[in-house]
Length: 121
Image (cartoon, rainbow, N blue to C red; front, side):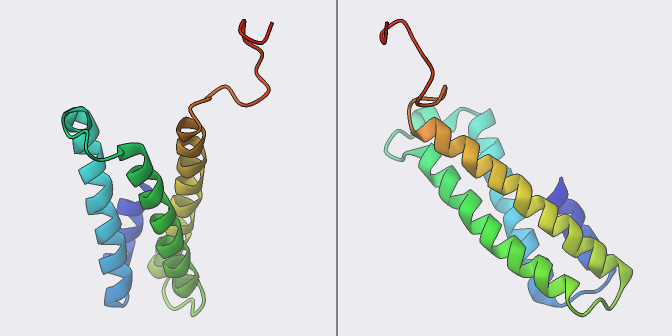
């Protein structure tokens, strides 16, 4: 939702095309992953490790959205462009949280290293 809002604000402000293209690309990739997981296609296509691809996507999204947000906030030309940059930065922060949660899932120990279980007793 944050990326879609950022893209819409960039379109309204008639921001430079790279801002719109990068945010649009991220929206398409997020929709792809949502459809993939909703239709359970990740369970049918077992030749790929989907959580790792999701983590890589989060890292790429963080990188691109921070760059776009900083570039949109530097010149401060229009209010909609600045708001698009703010929403892009918020999208990058939420992707950072997503990447951290996926990383915990990839550790195959979601409770963390210090969680006591009956096996440790």
